[in-house]
Image 1 (spheres, helix red, strand yellow):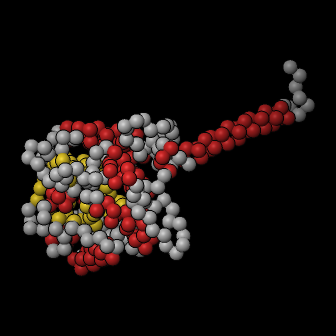
Image 2 (image 1 turned 90 degrees about the vertical axis):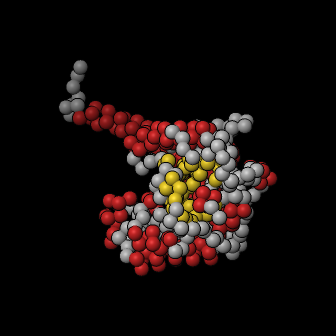
Image 3 (image 1 turned 135 degrees about the horizontal axis):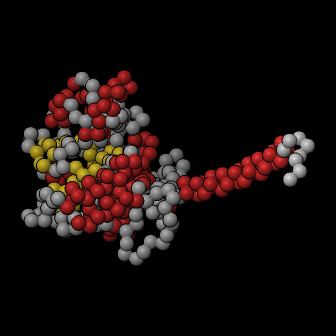
Length: 340
């Protein structure tokens, strides 16, 4: 084969140019494809399909109705559309109606206590979608754990429609509990908090006065939004002796990882089944452990759900299996477990 006068450099440049063009085209296709997946919202990459009859929507598989407004009331502020604010329709009213005897622990049936963590302005639409999905699966009573001031601003100032939605859910049988104050550790104590229970362990390292101020500030925010919480759940279940002393004089109950404690020092055994999705290992192992824990039985089956958990199909499948196995149990809230 004759050699090019420049030693083949021209041919190599042409070949490299063609390869670069092909790579750019392929990269563009991948980016466009990724953009289409991300635009689908929760459950990115899942196949969009029509909802089968008599089957609940899965949060990781958004369908044509996923972009509808979540259920609840709307409220406009300053003439500005609030976005995906909740609305309460006829179907929502039927689906969320508490069953006969709801909230009452009937002998021999066992209890199902589901809690939805990290309810705040940034997760509002996601939490509303998950709550509707739980209604479709027959869970008509849920404990909603609300972060009062995630960015040091009252949540109802950021999203007034969230306060309306919580009011609606409370009227339909759900319980509202305080979930820390801002769900963030103090900057100077973050290494200690992460070592103890992650970056959300905001009460680790605080003295008694600091702890009490944070707890009471969060409770004041909820009361200004029209919510009177009876209970408290610490982020990451990171309790300290100062926090327990404060809660004993402020709330009727607080929930730990294995028990629900009452202000009168009594408690109910209720191990929490929770999904770990922050690591690849947790996403693979926690669904198996949750299913095993559900089938192990116990008087109280307690399931913890975080909004990010249901971005993963394996975790959604695990929740469906657990709730399917618990159909014979009575759905209750943490308020119900604590008693009057």
